[in-house]
Length: 531
Image (cartoon, one colour):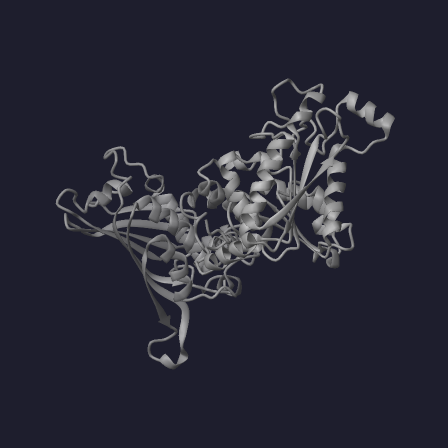
């Protein structure tokens, strides 16, 4: 098994700087023990103009049988059928990826203490792999898969199929490809990409894929994997098609992509579920969690529904009023409203969207999706997404619900949400609920001047909410009406306010539809984001 890494020098920097980056002296041939054989590092060429480092991995097939999992799930098909006669000694695979990490561990971290700053510089690289298994297994293998994986990362890809037997060309091509990559990037990035993508091309691993492989994937893919158009395929094949691990990895990658797009930390936007108990914060008047002792006593005496229950009932009533059958719950949290919608036989389809992967996992548990009858499960879908970006998945619904969502956004981001929901998705109706800030004085446990939830960026009084809703409706061709949710106080109004937007037939509607048609001609990246 062989790989070579070459670079060229400049007047300022010698090509032999590659030795500093790899922490391997160009004048020496070195040997390293691995769990399945020996790795040799040497330099076929080392001049100021051109320097090439080579890694030759000699596999011990007996050690592979003894220490590997052999016929285990996810193993190479060749290895499972013939333990001692297989492609493992020469085809670049997870064995080579592990050897790269073992031999070039410091280089993969981007550390070069002897030449500070050198590792941070992009440099021209050429990487040659004589034999790479590109087994599609339903994913479209061969040279095309090599290009799909490496070209989005800035590589120029040369991928030549290797014939089964050059003497008999009529036998066709094998599943192996001769690969040459050229590009200008940091050496550490190139090594991390190879560490991830070589097992992806092979579609198999020589060891058991444990849950910690998700962390290894995300660590090696930091800075490039979240934005890769084939990130779902990469996660699936790297994790040997272990679906639970793949789902976790894809959710975390999507969260990283959304956080990068919003220029925020992933932890900052994945806040819909509390760290301590994986449930929502027990915030005043804005929770489905347990009430305090005084509140429990008051409810027991009055036998009144909670504010959250009243809010859900008000939303359901508004949806019945507009005759919605296909509903998108935008910012679905732990899925309480989704569950209520599924109980209504008039609702034929429910889409739950949330930016938080933890919230979606909690929603799946709340709804018991894994135990739900097939016919019922066909009515619901949970997806990860940011509501401040246009998303093709949100189009075509009769109604959308933003229940206690807008107050979690920074005010400068509200126009983006308005465009994504009212301008791009354009459901026939939109239901929006938000706390009434005037009512906060009635919550005895809420200090004066505080908002009801630690993550609320603002809370509006009735006049502010009506002014915002009126402007948004006029801008996108909707009419809007307002409802009260919860007990109406004669001085400060209800605890929650609701706006029902209905798509109209005004000039603004036609203008918005024309703008949407113009936008549809633009290229939409994977995931549906266009802004």
